View 1 (cartoon, one colour):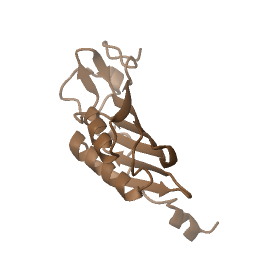
View 2 (cartoon, rainbow, N blue to C red):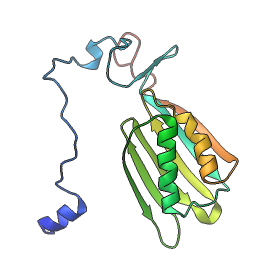
View 3 (cartoon, helix red, strand yellow):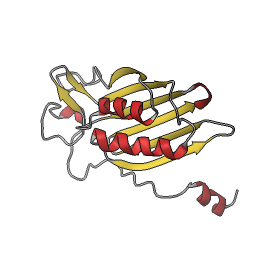
Length: 169
């Protein structure tokens, strides 16, 4: 493969990722107060502890429009706006003869989907940290795909990884 081929695939391009910021003197997380409200790590702190974010497994059942790439992209945008998240990038892929897979990369994490339009099924993941409100995505997806049958499972990602004392569990 030639360099130009790799460039067209996106390899070798700057990703925008930054190395860990040690220049500002930030100590590793286990050495800092994890319940300090001034921390800029977007972890969620509530009466139950500290966790990275809320991950919803959302199943759209008997949905319509699940083969429409533009409709899925708009549903991603509507979820982002409604949930108070920050969209960085959307990438979708339309399969032949049917189906769409895609991801919306967010500053707060991601939304992803795989669809089986021939049976009206869409498997969505909505994972958000910080102040975003991922549960609001459920109603957005129900409206976007014209169904009242939306099934949700919720995970608190990173729960139990950080103990209250500020060290890994």
